[in-house]
Image 1 (cartoon, rainbow, N blue to C red):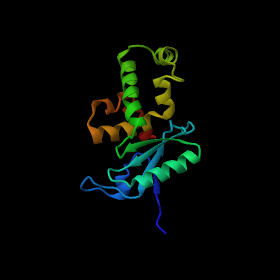
Image 2 (image 1 turned 60 degrees about the vertical axis):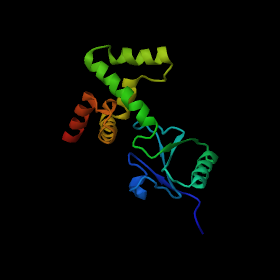
Image 3 (image 1 turned 30 degrees about the horizontal axis):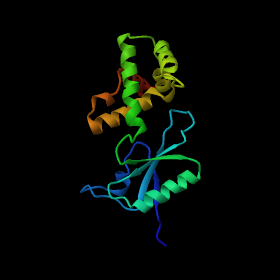
Length: 168
């Protein structure tokens, strides 16, 4: 019996680390998935469904159907480090941490501004701290190393937190 889709749970790694890559035409019936989780918070209801360039469309559709039937919201993305959520939020967290270092405002005032001014449920400083600055460092380091984009360079406070956590 041939499986329509093989689904692999991902953390920070790319799907290609499980399936192999060489000439850019990779794909099969294997797809990856990840759920965003901020530290010890409950994971979000979003499934980031990861496909390679030549992943079988029927495999993507089958995996999407399974997750939606289980009550999840599904966004399909290509096989890139950070997928959608981390690639969007990590530069925002880094910027907020940099602004804190520069004295733009207190953490409480930046968070209040984002909650009241933008309607966010929490502010960027409280969210990144609650999620764990060492984990933020781990994610941004990987994103920076693989993309070279300045927005992913680990913020100073996350470097300090990572070094302190390793010293314990």
